[in-house]
Length: 137
Image 1 (cartoon, helix red, strand yellow):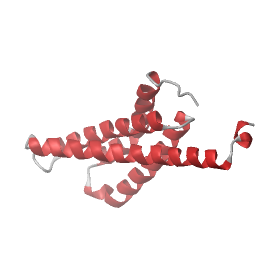
Image 2 (cartoon, rainbow, N blue to C red):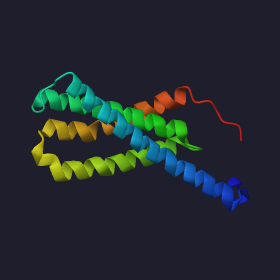
Image 3 (tube, rainbow, N blue to C red):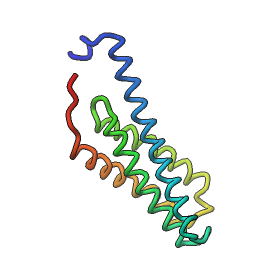
């Protein structure tokens, strides 16, 4: 009922903000992942092997949590639906990466990449909603 009463301009603004929230979440995820890579370089971690892959997987998990948190915090409405959209988009990206590069990595890394995604989005959503203050208007 409410959606029918909204003007086309208002609907466009909400749709634009929704898209920007998801894109900001992806950008935040990318930035956090780059920070983990830069930190690994600063700590002089070796470039290959299981310890480095473990480090990288840890930062992927942290960046997923950060991305989901950002999406939910920036969502103009329906934050859980935004988290679901983010989850599906990242699942597609991770699935594509595992399909294309899976043979280049050990199975535990590929499994960790896919199996931790629900946890990442759940935790990011939970953290964002815990302190979310309703907006007026």
